[in-house]
Length: 253
Image (cartoon, rainbow, N blue to C red):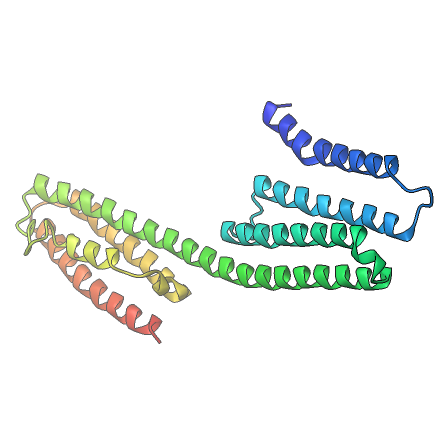
């Protein structure tokens, strides 16, 4: 067993158990002669507060994937406020307010406080879950778009080398190194929302596959056949750019 796992077991299991055991021990060391309802109630509530504290600390180290880091920070603040207010209320009632209010009032106050903490935490968690789901989906699309961008960059580099080796007269066009760089620039400026459509994803893959086929055929061609493949690449780039514009318009709706 690695040192990291040993430390996690100590921090996540052994330390909370020891803390609770010592708390119970201290309570019983200073318990009154008559073990009252208030004594048992305070003991149970103290253990609850400690469980909340250690539960939150463990959630930080375990990095729960279902919630975001900002939520853990916000939840930690809520939990800290709850622990402070709860502990303060417990001490205040035990030392002073027990002479003026019954245990029922005290229990009701603890229940209301706990209920408020749970409601706020759950609502925040629900909002965070929806937010994280949206962000994860966008990141996934961005990663896919990054794949298409890297793929066309690789193909453009290969085509440029072939143009240089075979002396293709269309090796430069405007400010681009090759005609394929026009398509490369177009794909690089696509936004992730275009990948919301499965049709768009499929079309992009088909375009890149066709582009790779033309590059391979151009590499194998010579003479008149080479000139034909030059023209095919130009037509392919022009047609593909028009299709990309169409896909962008479709995904904007």
